Amino acid sequence: MYMLARSLLFRIDPETSHGMALRALDSLHRLGGIKRLVGKPVEDPVELMGLHFANRVGLAAGLDKNADHIDALGELGFGFIEVGTVTPVAQPGNPKPRLFRLAGHEAIINRFGFNNRGVAHLVAQVKQRHYGGVVGINIGKNLNTSVDDALDDYLACLEAVHGVADYITVNISSPNTPGLRTLQFGAQLDALLAPIRARSQALDEQSSRHVPLLVKIAPDMTDEEVALVAGSIERNGFDGVIATNTTLSREAVAGDPQADEAGGLSGKPVFEASNRVIRLLREQLPRLPIIGVGGIDSGEAARAKRDAGADLVQLYSGLIYRGPKLVSECANALKIN
Image (tube, rainbow, N blue to C red; front, side):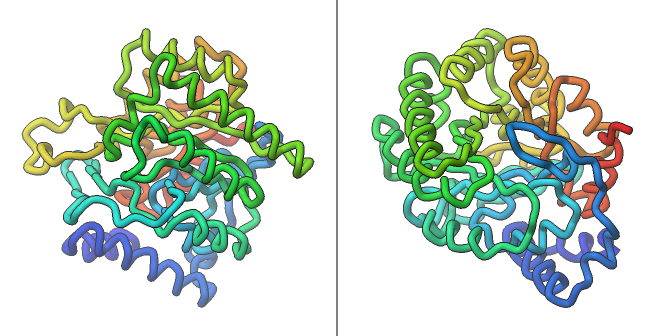
């Protein structure tokens, strides 16, 4: 059934069909149809970062930027859902078109630019959720905020979402906000992570509730750069890392008619680059929780992420190409009996 729906949706502009699919999923959720289609979620409970995950498969940030569809998406069987990226105030993002399918490579290029309705809207939506699984919130900076002032935006988002998030991800790796990735390196990274960690700890103490803090990094780093990032994550006491975001490389999709579109490339072509970073992080941070994301399109691919060193995985592009059955396939593949 999904492949039939996909064939119809793939005839439409990608961003338009994305919205249509989410609205259709919401309607199916209200009618009670999702559970009948996907069956019972896979039970594979795991405790990590002080949180209880029903299984090891999550939804990556970016698909539900405003937390408008948590309950419907949750019924697909995810053990956790990450919403956002959200910024302090609403912003439209980059001009359209800004989403492109590279179907021959099972890949997507996006240059959304953190389009979202602002943190107040997202917080209100998360408060209304009925989904009982773990919900992470991915935070970023507004486009018109300079890189020098980025910390102010991250702190504003952190304070706004702390009370409703199960964990918080600091996104410093989107390629679609100019200058953002420069925050991943050297003294700039320490200057960003240290005060975020300090404010997070203060909020934890005020609420008597620990909210794990993670950072999401890019795949386009040398081995030495990954080691530097790992050192900063460890020094600043972060609870975990998400590896990885989209790539700027086009080597794997050379010759595709859409390959020269600006933006971040996700899907199957980023699979090995993501795994490389995960392996390096696991060597540098042997005990730190790692969430692996990038190019997972099968249970076998999910296991490869685990073998590289990931504790949990997230889906995005694979879900678009394979459909909801991918969630249970990956969860069963990762299930440890």
